[in-house]
Image (cartoon, rainbow, N blue to C red; front, top):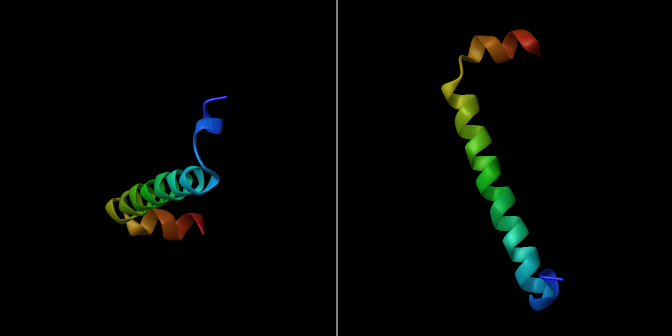
Length: 42
């Protein structure tokens, strides 16, 4: 497996970085969208 070539710490770090970037992108999309749209759905 390709993952076996990475130490557990490195693989975990990569997952955290990818998740953090996804969270920032998702948060950016929320700010760009009209707030009234999100308020109506909640």
